[in-house]
Image (cartoon, rainbow, N blue to C red; front, side):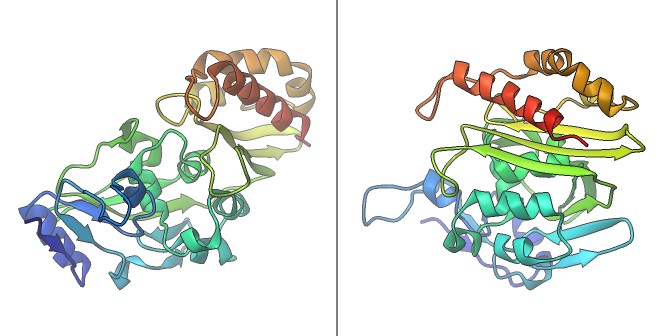
Length: 280
């Protein structure tokens, strides 16, 4: 018989993780679908389940001079409604799901699930967010994109869990999230793009693009992004085709039930053009 853990504190959760291997569930909105079984039967989850949604010390928003910190069990609707949260992340959450799901879903779960089509993951990478990861023995910080090893795979050790997300405060002249899907919410993206850009005196000083659903992981290449730093807006607009060509090899979608690789690639390239057109 599978045992389930329901710790009341973070320390209790980390003790359980130290002593056994668990499937962590906060909102469960991704995992319950992944492990669904026949109608009117319980989902079949192969590991013992560690429920953390009620751990109050992980449900918070903390604004500091350097960053905004979001606790791992903070529901998406709370994040979306907070004036502390960057507009692009609020907009992304609005696009992710309907209110009922947002009431339960968490960004930490969206990250740990490691879907290449995860909209929240896409925007957090564009925002240069970090993860605070803890086990009973240590705590460490890692960039969001570095925790993902492949589709549905992350680099968390069996005794580790995400306890917080940190979004650094940064100047943003433009931050946009674009999603192409079957409908506005409650639909997995066919293609998505998060763009976070800052312009100072017509010069690009910050440029981050992150693409969802066009590769085995969210596509983000810091070296390509950095080639934009120092360019004037007018030069960016004149070199639109060349800039799109820089990103084109990074975009490697597949055919699946939602869309075709050819369509996804063209849409992703069109979205880059849209970002550049909207630069000012």
